Length: 156
Image (cartoon, rainbow, N blue to C red; front, side):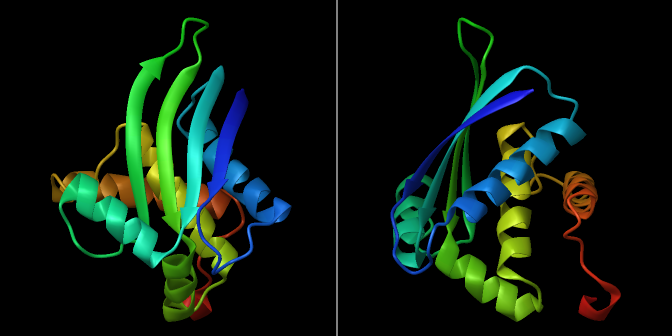
């Protein structure tokens, strides 16, 4: 499996390091592997802050509030068979706040949000029914656990 990620940083609240990009890459690859996806995939990842994601949320979802992550699936294949997954937008500001709120690392929260968003890009959703929500949560937990970033007993 090969993966091309187009990163864009539209914020200054958190440094976007090489190791952060590799964490995001690992989370996407872990999700694709869990879902049995082979071949070449492409995805765009944009880092923003609360105000940036609020503007996107307002424009595309008519919700005037910041959120942690947004997913914009493409469901397209290129002429060469490349799976063009779509766009992930992560508020690193919100990610930091949620990591502190939930008592785990910033890295774990970034990975979790990336897995969550990648599942959306693959067609999963959690808003249509309780059953779909449970299924998506099960997948997220399994993938983050497989990455070695699961929630410990102390964090529960």
